[in-house]
Image 1 (spheres, rainbow, N blue to C red):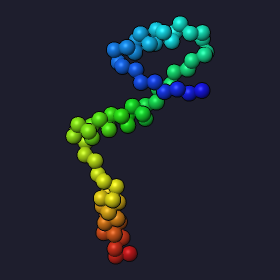
Image 2 (cartoon, helix red, strand yellow):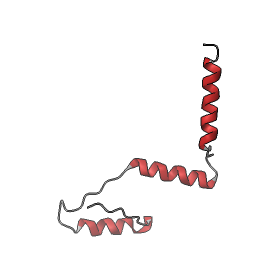
Image 3 (cartoon, rainbow, N blue to C red):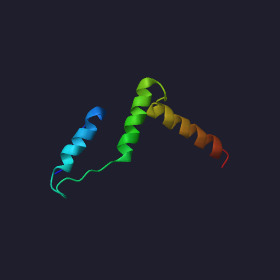
Image 4 (cartoon, rainbow, N blue to C red):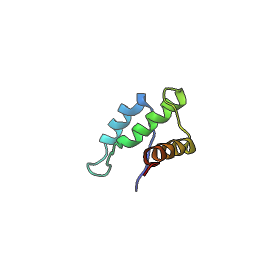
Length: 73
């Protein structure tokens, strides 16, 4: 069984102490760097630190670059 928990930073150390009280091997902790990176990017977009390009705008820009590069082929 897999469960995802969100734990406040100021409680994390206490929570880890609680987990250490459990028998060895019954709980496995995984840190997924991709989830952390995605959360950071979403926060940066929300705060205005990073711009978000709408999908259609990005696809149109790529199409124009391809057309200008290979137009004479």
